[in-house]
Length: 300
Ligand code: KIV
Image (tube, rainbow, N blue to C red; front, side, top):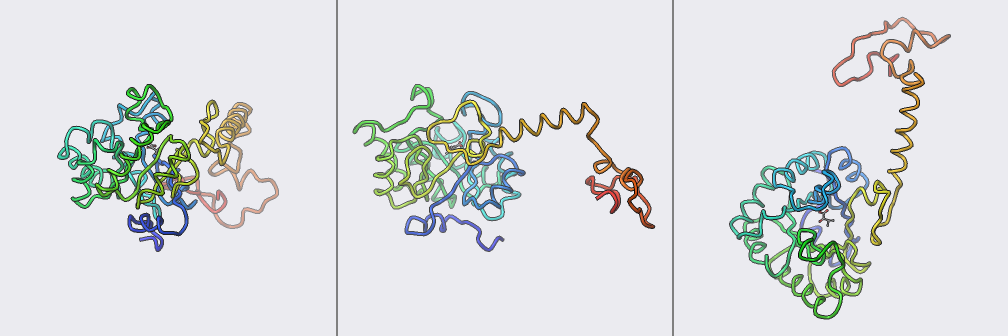
């Protein structure tokens, strides 16, 4: 195990001090490995995968099987980060039994270390049942994307005193049900602060202001891979979208001109093609070994 592996008790303890929690979504092994090495405390396999991986307009049709599939890929490579899985729409709303079954499947088949549920007062019973079975639960209140139709779109929640009080009650209900942290999404910054000050578990904000105990962003947002629309709460920490388009343009141009592949990127050409370069006594091996490694030192 990684010496600094992030655990549930470690996340809880951040409420009392220590660095703020840096969480990010992840859906595949290649990016998850980079995000883990980059220092993410939490990798969340969000049901946002429906939108950012599958290209759907919302998260509602994501299945338990799909979340588990992406969970296995992320968990396989995450050495330090804690790996959380989002419980999909209608995998937990029906009853506590259904919720516990689904949460168990997420740990057994998705390799998750904890699960996240959207909702507050109305799902507190489900949370209590899952937690009492030894499965850690992260809550999620405010803008809950699984309620997109009830909210009339992806809208900031908790505006006005009544609405704010309802979100506060949701957070308190989750705290009492035993969650180890709560995602606060799409809330006025002041409400994010008030909830953070009112609960004893860490809050992790996304569009809920700077006072939360941590922050979470969708990985493609923070990496600048969505270039058409950037919500107000998203900061792009890189412009990978531009980098991908530029790289692709260069690749297309070099394929068309014949500049790629050159001798350096072809098996068995390097030693013979590099004019004036001694080949030594080693033979050039043309066979491609498993995994497409270099055919010989000359090809490396
Ligand atoms: O599904 C998701 O990615 C999420 C985060 C944005 C909090 O729930």
